[in-house]
Length: 323
Image (cartoon, rainbow, N blue to C red):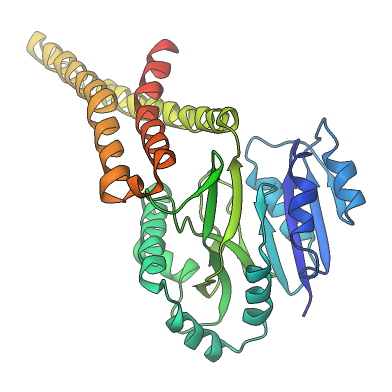
């Protein structure tokens, strides 16, 4: 059964060769959509046997990911990021799962040792999708998680490589992502950077993790962290704009009304500042370290919890500086 590898890249010369090499013997076709990289990404991909489609580097990177998926001809598609690696154990599991009947997959899902952990993570992922895309539970089940139907996609847990080691706690694992899909049965909506792939049919899990080398150095981690802070800044801007629009709709009939509107806006800004500067950082730090057992990852867990926490304060300062 033919398997295609789909990759969207931009300046990934340090990752692309190792990513493709990790899939050797598993995939029959490699499609790379390169967003006009200025380094040797395209050249290295071609040398590794990939079909390279050159295009613009879209701000919504999922557009290029979907373009790579659409160009694949395999019955199954493994959609990866360049900083992800397939282990021999995962490759073997993928070969087994795509050769199973739907009934056999159902039995396999019930046998997963970390089934409860995976189900809890999947529930959190779907709840986040409900919040961010304003979907109803009924619509979500109809488009992404249809019970008693064919398995057309699989979450794969990820082990995140952080400063020389892997994080197993702190809310980081399983970090499940939909990476294995049946062609024509799943797509990226291309609306949001954190969106979930929409699947026609049922979504299962694989047991063997992907290796995710997103933060091999502290510099790389801070660069990625800074991008996520920018997303939080946009979230703050959206909340403020929503409040401003709401205030403009209210007409001040008297001086008292005007004062009330101004006090309401002031109290919102005050609470928002306290929340993002104090409560969110503290709650996040202790939640990752204690509730999610990040302390068991040692000093890496502490560093990860600390920088995950202070990103809220950093986002608020960045937001106020930009006006």
